Image 1: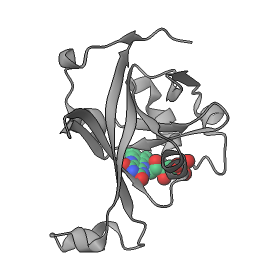
Image 2: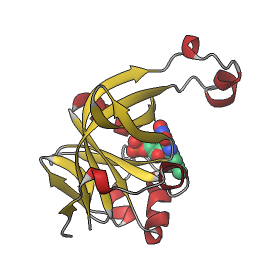
Image 3: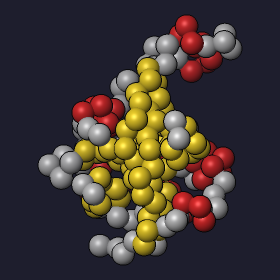
Image 4: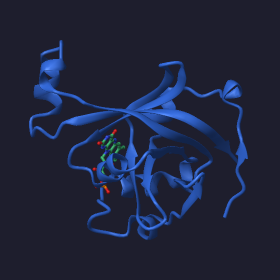
Length: 168
Ligand SMILES: Cc1cc2nc3c(=O)[nH]c(=O)nc-3n(C[C@H](O)[C@H](O)[C@H](O)COP(=O)(O)O)c2cc1C
């Protein structure tokens, strides 16, 4: 079990484009009884409704979606490059079919009862504020539906208040 320190969000220096878009992250949700994690490379961090927030986009087909929908919290966790293969695994296998934690060499840990992977080096613990299903009629760019949703596996945008940042 690693020791994480609370990290003041005002001191956070990260480039969301590379951190999320190129290095990827794990979204984790659930409870001690059952917890799931999956890789994301779409999303962001910002300020909304008077809170520091993350926003992530989860397709209907993801097992992780059930955990986020059924709970109040999720985490967004970042890793060093040695975990790239683990993130690849968690982004190409479903927790419905395999024990992703064991297969990827990751360990679920909990703070404030919110799950996160213990091997991460930066973790944002989030309280779900909104779940916004994205629908075809929302697109003002007519190309998006055809390019990204040919199979109708739509995304829901989840906005989460960042209630804690932890680093090690
Ligand atoms: C690099 C990478 C980025 C991904 N980003 C997302 C994403 O932002 N949203 C999403 O719904 N799926 C994304 N995926 C796909 C899920 O991680 C993948 O379908 C995963 O197996 C779902 O696991 P689950 O069924 O256990 O939830 C990504 C996959 C990879 C490899």
